[in-house]
Picture (cartoon, helix red, strand yellow):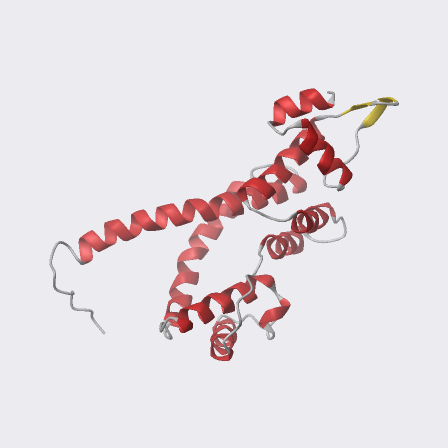
Length: 217
């Protein structure tokens, strides 16, 4: 297909496609003449992935490049590639880390038997967690750390569903791409479904009474 058809099928404007080509986010097509190139379904799939990373994930071009580099690495196990991609799509904000929050994260990892992230700033994912706990401490929620272990247990069920979903996609590349898109879209879905869960549980626990319920323990 030519670039016009690629644009039509992907929903991405031609100027944007040409920008992605210049930035190396999309591989060059096969030249059929000095001013014409042919693109195939692999280009279409990659273009849709880039669009998801930029539009859904809100990633910068530099971050998208990191994600694509992790996907295209051929000398890593699928598990390690998934970890590398998760690191690339996790972008910690400019939050000053509270030393006590860092200690909370380290203690959490120790309880869970995770020994690799002694320095939380070495990982985008653990840095994000430390930043979230730092923000909680800054507004007086010093004990938010108590939610980490029950959160993890609940999220393992979600992680199992995620992996079963993407494992059905066939090739290793399709699994990686499914994980990227699924994580970005899944984060948005989880926010909405969590609010629904809060509504249902609060109706059961709090009801319409103005008095606070008694909490066991």
